[in-house]
Image (tube, rainbow, N blue to C red; front, side, top):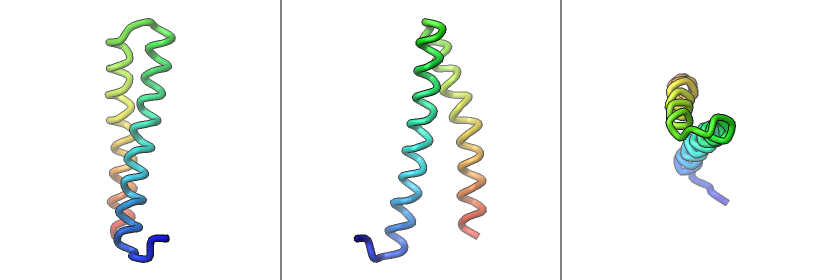
Length: 65
């Protein structure tokens, strides 16, 4: 068990970043399967990272206050 609160916060933050990447990769993969185009998947991934990344950034910023 992790006792240090700072270590726990850092691990939780890393977990949220990994979850963000997993969600974006899953959505991009679905777009590739549906369209058959890698370019579409890349665009969908980047849009997903931009939108969900901004939401996560705002959450982290609000959480740090």
